[in-house]
Image 1 (cartoon, rainbow, N blue to C red):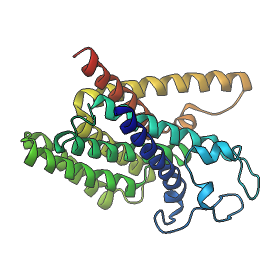
Image 2: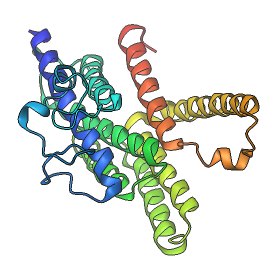
Image 3: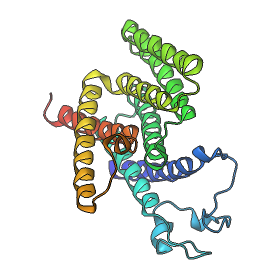
Length: 272
């Protein structure tokens, strides 16, 4: 029976993944992500139902648009598959089963699914545009506040720990709105700070700190490889120019999901 449940969760996950690809493409362009019909970004032809089945449409169409035959970027397929996998992995590691479905384990899973939605969309937009979208961060803030209320009312969590995070939210948003409106660099930094707070609320300080460490390690490796490549190509890019290309939000998102699943796996099988 659990196989059927996880199959359903996987299908839900890949449909969410399809939405992520849409949101990643449209939000930076300030396009509607709910009402506007899906279309091919190359020929602008409206897509039919058979063109919009996550994963399967990509495979059946040979990774090409049905109408203009332009190749579809593999990231669409990758995001959909990864989303399905993460949804199933999260359900399994959080002990979601047909035999123990209850408010106590389903509601946290729903909150974490919304958190994963934030991570995917935020990371994807940052990877494509090196930009932290304020609207996406606001979605995360609202979800995290709802999660705090849930923990306080139903789980009797210590509210004082979360009050600190709420105060941090307010200070960063005020700083971003009042004093740093004209500075794109500082807006990016403020966006990263909000992301870290959201991560701390959902995944805890231990996972968040290790996420930051893993992110710094990944960025260091990236910079090292880029310097080697530039040396071979005799590029004149400076370290300052190179650092502007680093998508910190993307690395944070990937690192957080990896470490979160690692910790949940250890908790389930090894008992940390």
